[in-house]
Length: 422
Image 1 (cartoon, rainbow, N blue to C red):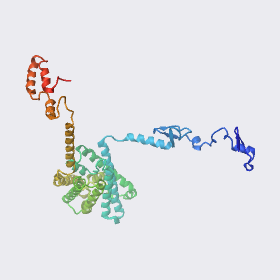
Image 2: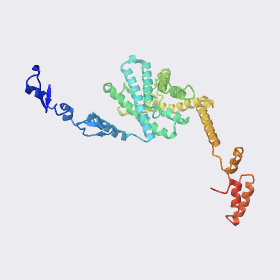
Image 3: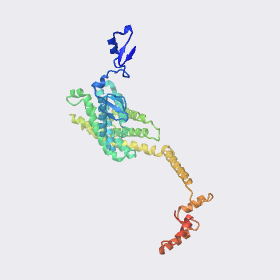
Image 4: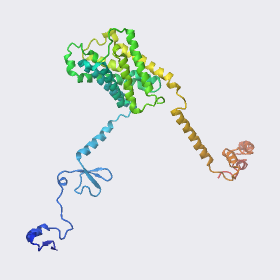
């Protein structure tokens, strides 16, 4: 095969005619490489490219992937990234507002799942009381998982009050947390009605499903017995919470704490649920009770001999009692050598050793011999503290009253061992 000035010629019999061979070799003679067809994406869609510096540039040139451009990126991806950056502007910077929002969402989740378990029991009695207890226990666990790292996962005004009394929560969180928890309970009840909308629509007389939202006594327990039931149950719940979250006791792993708290709630509901329904949480009872009144259940505040106030007041009484019992009987008496005290003591010793090392490596003063380094350093660290510095300093002070420059040379020699300041 012979090439000359861009023309193609061949002597092979099977290579076709001369014109065909010229078409095949077109552009090869005086050019380095055959021209490839342009990719479809370069000619049809204006793409966006990432530069090597990380910036998004547009439009992407035909030589995408060459030079300072790395790889094409779809416009939808760029728009999604920009929208995510705009959403970050909605971040709440105020700590109390952010934590209160977490408490609202956590209490909403708790009431929604727990009341839905009760509604499911009403429609399917085979679920049983243990099914309701497990529903509320699992609801508390998942709610603490969601909010524990933000606000502590209180989800209960009685818990917030008890933790404030024991020093585990700041008092400025008590009111905003409590308000958020009551609002979350109210909204959680609305979610439960939405989940079982048809069942509530069929309850025309508003008499069958009123127990889904709030707790009521069994009819055989007295008012005093109901109060004692709620107070003791909430105290037992707080006792367990204080023990589980005590870092100097059993040191429960962080990821296990929500499950342990849920197990504690399951235990309390299992042992006392038949008395009054085991509310153990003012926000879980009063918020849904208000919602049930709003949707037409008129007797929710009169039923059970005006039982409604007991889950509120008794929980506020029992919760702090259980927390304070644990605090004064166990937490207050942890040995001082435990955990944090040991770390603080070790840190103090390390700082003292570092100061001593820096003190020993301090530069020596002018005219100091090796043998008398410490004595001379101390005498020169403060004016007038040498062998006869105090006497010279006294004379210098007296002379300064008459002549400001009097006695300066002698004072410098006695104090600094030289000819004065450098």
